[in-house]
Image (cartoon, rainbow, N blue to C red):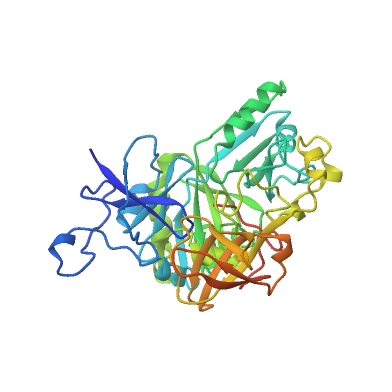
Length: 430
């Protein structure tokens, strides 16, 4: 049986580390030069190494490949995570080297795991509004919205990007949860005139400070001038495709919503060839950069147990304008959260990946927990995103974080290099 060994990445998610069998044709090398016992074992960045024996994950068709998987493999991917039951590249050269390159050049990301749920029909907007406290009535046909999706109690189910394609047609570009079944259940239960489906749409992201140069070269100046969180139409091999100015980084970029899996290899090659002189590389969402930018990760930073107010997404909650939102009554009673997400800075030497929540305390009392953490080379410190109790969330408050290493001090702070997801321009959760 072909086996993959599971490891955690800087997001705290499980990905596949090679064992004796090269399941996805990933390259292997000695983890300790000259050590016969380690011959053929994979070498991963220090931030990704597991200090203990890790279990195995058997490869299955239930873990879906993407239209770009062959190209990603050929580009030298070192690790995958599983996201929406689909492969998502996690590391190419190293987390740190990928991070520096993302900030200086341009990368092509296989983010086909950002599956689309298409809501189509006269009741499409009504169904969407049932599940979100953000007012969608003023959304224009070329617009993208960052949208908290909640259950009837106000708990976060997902935080997708919603693209409005027409008055009766929306794509919900989801984070990592099975949101499609929620929509199917509500559509059936309320007797709505709407179809709920997963179209053959596979996003491919162009990210980095040189992305606008590359996009103009590929698709023209009008596409380069697309405003943030707006989308336009491009053509590739005779097929119309949507392109949006968006992406899960703060380095500027675009996302192509490739229509038709058969176009995957050709579209990938076309973009890579056009970007050769721009130092284009295959890349992936980077845990260091996204924490610096305050971009949230559903399942790590917030879960069903948290409301949008606790996730610091209050600016996307407009309860006075959404009378049909099923969670409206519950959220009206939860507008003053007792805990909330905060950026934190942790002292000392570089910390390992945050694969489990790390408790926060003040004088021995519970003060919250860290859900995401990484060492930032640019800020020369450990950074993180934590759910902090109200008494301790003011910037500058000193807390103690408990990891598998000795306890150390940390401080809540407002921002790192960029505005947080809720305080500034949003990007989709991953």
